[in-house]
Amino acid sequence: MRWGVVIFPGSNCDRDCLAVLQGVLGHEAIAIWHDERVLPTVDAVVLPGGFSYGDYLRSGAIAAFSPVMAEVARAARNGLPVLGICNGFQILCEAGLLPGALLTNADGLFHCHPARLRVESSCCLFTRGYASGEVVRIPIAHGQGRYYADPSTLDRLERSGSILFRYCDARGEPTPESNPNGSLANIAGISNEEGNVVGLMPHPERACEPLLASTDGLRLFLSVGSLPSGAESGTAYVRSAAG
Amino acid sequence: MAMIRARVSILPKRTVFDPQGETVRHALVHFGLAAVERVRVGKEIELEIPGDGDPAAIRARLEAIARDFLSNPVVEEFELHIEGLP
Image (tube, rainbow over all chains, first blue to last red; front, side, top):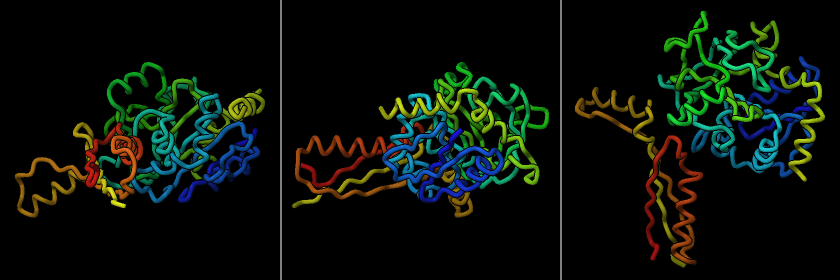
């Protein structure tokens, strides 16, 4: 399994992701600079958290036009697994690889604390290590994480099972009180309809070691990494995209 | 060569909650303007480009820039003002 972690100017969780992928999972993982015109051969791509381009214009708006993103988009359309975490989620929405947008938290505050999430679907490539309805704890750290989509898009997300995680309380109920940022329908993470592009505001890479109080994020990476033929198929996606 | 100056005014859509606008509205109450019912805070971007070329093509290009890059149609609306275009 070979991962590529894209680094944009202002990314600040790229090393955390590399540390988990290499140090905790023992996978191969390389850093990819945003200015690359060719995507190296990888089985999956992570767009890490941070504040790319200082959040100028809109969070993720400028990174979405980075040279490497055209290649990531092309490979994603050919089935390459792509995971956007926090700012990476914002970039995927701005790039049109995921529907909707992420807005300033409803209360105007930056939220940095553990969050409870209910796994809504375990059918996705990235969530099949979880059980549907399971409650996990993964930290959030964002000022602009309020998911918004127009009613027809939201309806499509619900019907296609593309909502992967919702903020919830200890009983697994997605209550208004457990919604830290005012996200529509308590949405914390979604996928595209094909299930290979996933974005979420919480930081799974910060919940992969017992020392960090939760290891619930680990299965997100393992779900992809444990693919029996993952390496081959992922590599094939990139090769066919380049060809 | 004459320059064309374009201004793109961007506001959050009325259907989207704007916490910054709401915070400003609250402050306006302290300022003594309790009658203000709604505030939306956006941004204005000014572009200067050389004025040579087909005016219709320049306008179309500026509209594409405003729609596809400077604003996000999911949550924002924009107005494009162009000065100096024949």
